[in-house]
Amino acid sequence: MKILICGYQGYIGHSLTKVLLASGNKIIGIDNGDRKSNVLSIGSRSATGENCLSHEDLVSLSIDISKD
Image 1 (cartoon, rainbow, N blue to C red):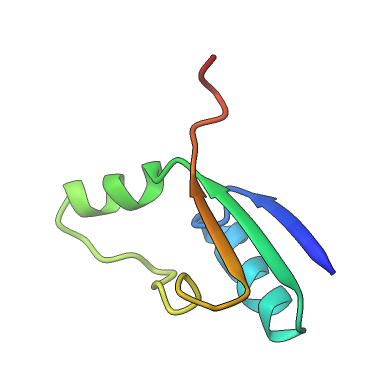
Image 2 (cartoon, helix red, strand yellow; image 1 turned 180 degrees about the horizontal axis):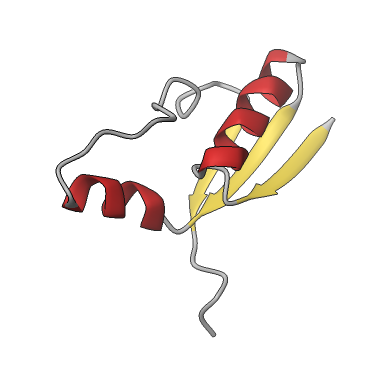
């Protein structure tokens, strides 16, 4: 199944993406990268990690849907 996840790099979206990929789904992930840049700007590390961000069944799109 193909699934679109908005905010896939966020805390909930990341966990959801991992579970759905492990179940054999194909994911289209949209995220503007704000969480990652905020975490890096304070010199911290993300609690979610990035282990599923390079999965072969994940299409990653960097888009900010809040802008016109």
